[in-house]
Length: 281
Image (cartoon, rainbow, N blue to C red; front, side, top):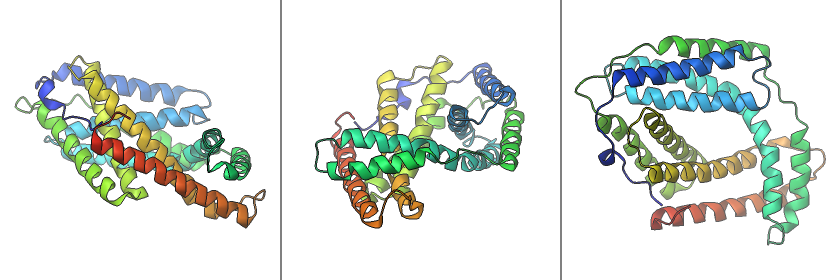
């Protein structure tokens, strides 16, 4: 189902104290991560990535105010932070994806590729999940900088929520139009990022008492999840030619790559059809 524009159903005024409360909550989360023992092992990587997306959604609200230069600076830091964690995140997700796909392909036309898929998952699962010490230090520094940037900003009195969310809605819709037309990995990934920013903004604003429709939020959440599934498939397809797992020969790798491409085409077709027709995901 195509997510509707939310702004007409949402009050237009934002209390500065509420926004400051959001900033404080984000600062508290950063402090929790920085003080954790053994952080950046397994699940905390996911926590930091989720936090970075929430922070991006936060700063997007400020890009349409006089604080845009500060918001742009903060977003550039967050891009660096996400980049430092992306490879570790993929190494965690891809073996789980292999096992999940194997269960879905049972008894279907792609079943012949299941043994190769399981061997790939087993091999990926044994790869080390390490973040080098210089990168860890850089991550610590970036998180600390984010906390420092979240100053008690004053929301412009003549600037309503409709304007703040309008830019995110428009970006999401433009990204959808391009992705539906081209159906390539890069444009689907961009669409997913725009959907997640919009979802996190709605989530954050609802947390300070603003009326953000639950059904609309659920639609964005489901759409982001479906786009995330396609993104993980695209990552696996991108990794596969370079991986050369020792427990698979070239013929098996070719069969598996063909099966993944066919499955991706099916998933994209279902997503596009449902989105255009307005059917729920």
